[in-house]
Length: 421
Ligand SMILES: Nc1ncnc2c1ncn2[C@@H]1O[C@H](COP(=O)(O)OP(=O)(O)O)[C@@H](O)[C@H]1O
Ligand SMILES: [Mg+2]
Image (cartoon, rainbow, N blue to C red; front, side, top):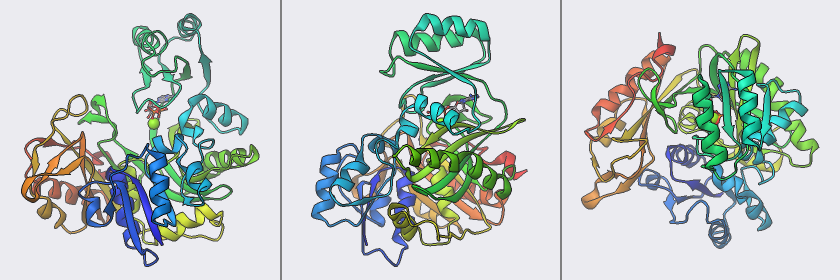
């Protein structure tokens, strides 16, 4: 099979790394990829949102399967465009990608399918939103209704914070669409659950917990994700299965009933509340770095599973996973997330990758002069380690981090610390 992965982050490096192991693979491309990906795939300089060029490349190269990593091309319709050109694409159509593209869509779907989720209300009028929030009081959650690159949600603990969020989204139109959703604030532990879907069947890919804040002890601004681990001790397999049944399967059935079946990776963000697990949101692709820890534990060949998801044939599928734990630590460039420094040289990559059980995935890297690797983005590397338990995997990951020689980079030092105790 000839395969094209779309994207350039640590997630896409992990996808390429897993697919490259498949005996079914004849050749792997990645658009646009990065220097780490270039060791397993041929990188082609096409932007993930330049869908017309991606389709033309896939046709010219006779690609058998396209695997998009990020949400933006999915929401923009890459799957529809590939399928129209007769090319299989392991992701949802534009209509099904609304599960991530629109918070209103997902809340309505959750209610229609009796999926447990926070109580919610949608507002187009800022004064009505303000009156509602004064009546309900804090804490309360305010969300922009569209893709906001992880910056559209405020968990307000004071009325001033709620007011500032309404002003930014509704008056200043910071995210384009001025509509908001106001939600009941759920309390509990947050978990991410992943399933591979073929329109009808959901195959469990496991669960992970990520660390969104930039600083140790969950301090500082939100980021794309500073680390993750899997499995999560507080979310055992029987709970995973229960959430698959109560949250993911009803969503799949409702999407199929509406004539917009969901294929691809469905990622349920869950809150484990005192009243049971509740849906926070769906994403229509792997998380980054959750993808890295999940795929590090996968023993089966990923490629036929992705193909079966496109073909509606996941029913008889089974995936095998190691009993090992995986921990991923993200290395970011100094200044991330506000203003990451670019151009610093990263040394010690070979030494880090030589730590037993460790894989170094690239994200924001670029090839520098004389064979060097430079930082070229905010999140730059994912150091992913597997071992018998979370505690040992953690130790290995940080051993590899310490083998790097990159003074301009930093990471959180408490990834998976609570789970390791
Ligand atoms: N109803 C809620 N109650 C409590 N916390 C919430 C709620 N909704 C969202 N959050 C918090 O805000 C974060 C971001 O919200 P989410 O809906 O996942 O939006 P996005 O990932 O698109 O920014 C969640 O990971 C969670 O920590
Ligand atoms: Mg989220």
